[in-house]
Image (cartoon, rainbow, N blue to C red; front, side, top):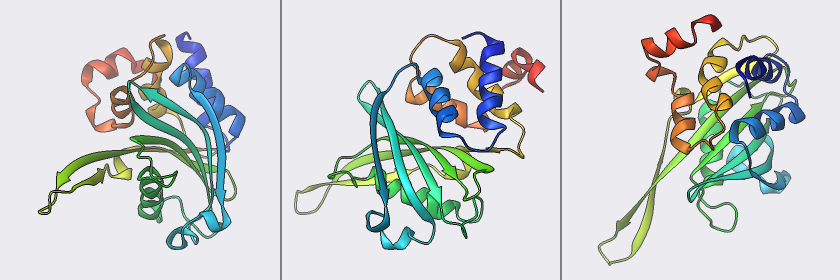
Length: 206
């Protein structure tokens, strides 16, 4: 994908109200390929602590980076839930999901569209788990998990938001034919690592 096509794709996806078809098109171009694996959690499938925040979770697919499993999710928020004020609850909900909600299988990360009830504004996030195996005093092995703060791994996008930062971060991945790694995605979301050289290369976006 050339730069102008990539810029148009980002603008069309991120400068509008959330649209599932556009989001899927963006993911297919970003990741190059992923396995379609759809299901939906809602109602009693949402744990009680999260029911006042989350209306539904829909998985549209899963991506594998050399054994690292990344699920592709759409989370619809309850009407009363703010995209900003309830970020901790939203992050913890995804952490619960990644820690084995699907039959106890641990997942490494998720790319998530958190969508407000009116669809106009939404948050595109990367939530990553870091599993550490520790041995207890009795000799049993258990998993200790940590995940990155959502505030450092999100873009607020939508009808009322510009996409310049998202363009600068995702253009390099969209322009390449290589399959992105989880590390590539982390770097795209981590706006604190932007360098002077990067801005020089993509200065036309700003």
